[in-house]
Length: 244
Figure (cartoon, rainbow, N blue to C red):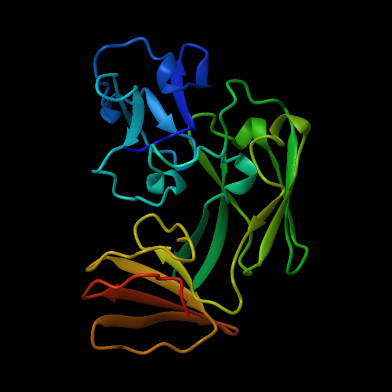
């Protein structure tokens, strides 16, 4: 049985953290209602009332993207807290004609966004990107902010104290020595050991030259400096997409 410890409920006052024991309902609530959301992956979740087991939340098996840290937890596993500082923010690869650029996704669960300036710095070239979050940040979803065209291994976020509980100051960016795999539909970077689906398109950003294999279709779609972007599709199931 899943054990979700980072669920928020949509209320009249915005999103608020909630536990399954706090839900006063004898009936199941579907993820389709949009009432409950997993903070870690931003997917709506189901509420299952008490019965044989205590009440609990669970991810939907119909989710297209199943990359959430708490999907692997069981009810018997120790419920060690996953703080926001342990959860890397999503990074997108945007391909535009014969070029590519990056966007960092900021997650916000504050009902009222203060008037504050946030600066994101790319570690590799110290390029800075400054945004007024009150003007840009969406309080009910992920807001993707441009962070330049050059790959950076890390991004540093400098902002007011109001947001320090939401994001880790240092965010992982692009690996130099390993392939970086992005979902072809969402453009989001996959975790290093993520599984991939057959007959689904992915993008791989790497310094290396890749070639077609028997069970994998690989097509180079652009090259800039020493970086190459490939379109990849697996014809049979294989795992650990981020491995070398």
